Image 1 (cartoon, rainbow, N blue to C red):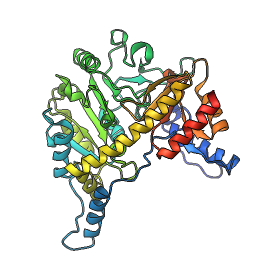
Image 2: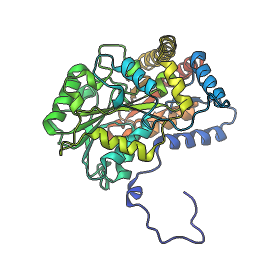
Image 3: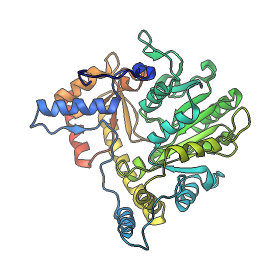
Image 4: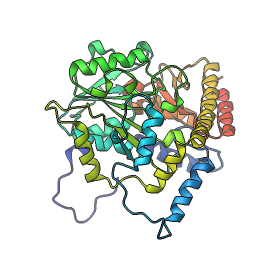
Length: 413
């Protein structure tokens, strides 16, 4: 927080910003990491906290971006603004590659600069007057954006929850899926599968229940499938695999964790034509207006790379990197399991969710950092349902993951 000195304006602070609790989780983790490095300048700190990819993007993809960028230096190759909705060829490739025979049209695909940015654009679309439900634990961008837009109401210190938000507990006792029979009706249901942070991929039966619940209540599901490339079992990779979902669901996804585009920035949102407001106006019309008003389109260079990712050769190269992270996840799962700790995730997602019963998440985080120089993420940072857990990411070089495994075994044996 900056010190207050000198002149100040007469503009009141947005009340919703005042309702936010603490800082955004991941920058807060980064600050603690820097403080630890300052305290132990000779320690080799291993970051298994923020879910940032580490392996190089395959040459076939980076060369396509480099070629596109170099062409911008020529009269023939120079291009300025593109369509706000995205390159038509890329939209078509996304529809065909990720949705196959699920009836998703290229015109329903909106290319963006990442799914987290799309979360905020969707919040702008939905406005402050809708009621929302979130998984607990939940990726903090959903909750924080709901607070900022004005959907949440005041924070309740006694419950550690916001007054106007329906928290859907998703833990081991209910197979990481909410008990919909006791869940209140809301306008919007934020749902992430495979889930960040727990790593759980909802089963077909679970998603059928979710779609039926939304249809019965006239709700909209905002479905985050950013980690679908990591699914190894029969769990659906898209909400649109469920009959009736096109009438109740928006899906957001990303190239970040699939193609290593965390720094390149590229994602997409699907808004089906059948998805209607209560007045029967198609929601896709308003989302298109939001995109055209608030966004000039994703980087044309990034889109060139995305198109190559979805070529036959590029796609296989991307899956090889995903398999590398999956192998990392197995090493971490086996490590924590060998220490008689309850471990979840790490199969259909690059995240491992570890339970430390009776302990506070921040205390476990601090102990691991102090004694092993490993950065994790405290589960309570994802909501009250995450207390007692830590999240560990499988993104990392293999030698780093193996070293982390050795340090963790030494600490908890």
